[in-house]
Length: 260
Length: 151
Image 1 (cartoon, each protein chain N blue to C red):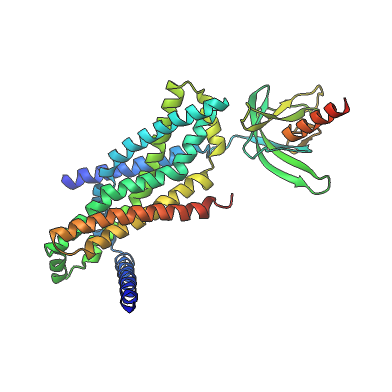
Image 2 (image 1 turned 135 degrees about the vertical axis):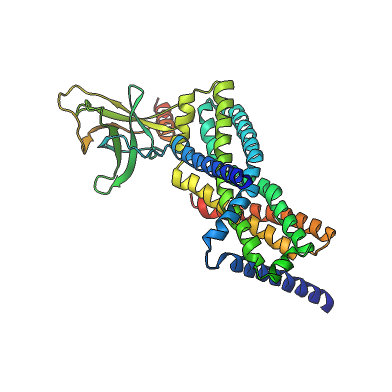
């Protein structure tokens, strides 16, 4: 009986300690005296591997999700003779929910796992230790640019996702299904509010980008330096960040849109 | 050379993202930096029945402005609707009438304006006296049932 309690307690303490270490890593990497001359080229390099390389998958999935939304929305709305509202449906669901969440899930799979594997391997091959030996802070040199790159590129990717999706939906509903383009866009414009909908979506994606890169970097630093450990850490990055995205999405949606 | 390509691609990525933000602002949410010149007119309604901000104001079905604010008049207990009319539409006579209409069965509410016969035109801050409230389905059904009973 006491053993069970002890096991629960130990697990809880371990999780709490992990969270504390992750927070320390984050603080240490982010809140340092800025050195723009050395850090900006590093961030640009990371923006390339985190942002630019994710662009294609984000744009393609955005296009298809927008097209599916247009198709599905049309078949439902045409029953009520209000198929011009398909623009509103596509835009609102993309801007508020699908763009931040789906982008974040793809980003976790595409960029988060790569970050963990990279940092895990650096740890396994003792590159991090040797950086420390020559007096370079690995948190600053390796971790901080990756955190910033994830933080910057997530909202950009999410906005690209949304706009590509909306144009995909427009192509399907206007060109293929024959919704009148004037009412498609005007119904959309009169229902989507820039501050309430677009900006809240951007805030969501900022939060997601932050959480994903934080989890990815921390899992990489914490991984057991073996091939098995790295694979486990990569899996955990994807699992944890997907769960966190979905849970946080609910919390954020409740905070932003719950009182309407 | 290698760094330069990376830098160019990153620059392209950031520009794409900012363009997407701009497109979301302008084409999706209808936020426009260059505000069209408008003037304000007001109308009182007994019941606005689901009219919202940003609803269209139309004349003969063509948009001539938008609803910008809806308030309750505490003295008269009616709804005061503030409309911004495009300034090139400067020929609305002071005895114009407004009514709240619905586009389609489930479509949004909008305001339909009909011009009267007076020479004088509405200017900034003008008030339209003649207004017809929104059609509320429950009231309509209630009236219908009442007539049936009294028959």
